[in-house]
Image 1 (cartoon, helix red, strand yellow):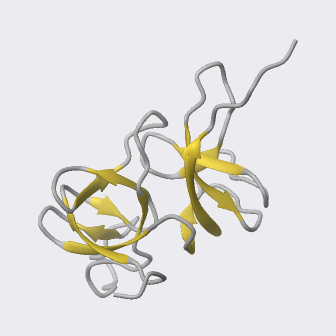
Image 2: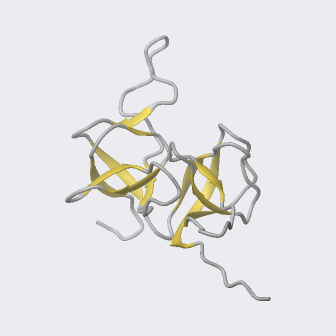
Length: 142
């Protein structure tokens, strides 16, 4: 598999489209449940089933327990669903409690960064990001 292709992983539970995911067992991922989780990547951009009016869940599911899904990993570009507050291009993004991207608040106990915004995006939309996984810790000087 070429290095620039999404990685095929197994779902360790229900994972929604374009959400942060974390490692959850052997070659398996689960949707991130908060800013303290160790982000591994971002779930695939399409739903597990074809869209059907009055049937397709909103937001769509990328995978359910046992399904295989594609995961965008470090340095790859993809879409991420924006959480409350959205973001602007250049923002460091971390996860909210539902795996959506939110601006890194840089609080006293900084969360892990999972992506850098490549464009402005409002809450609920899908925005272009580059997966960039690192600690959000910044030095404080007095």
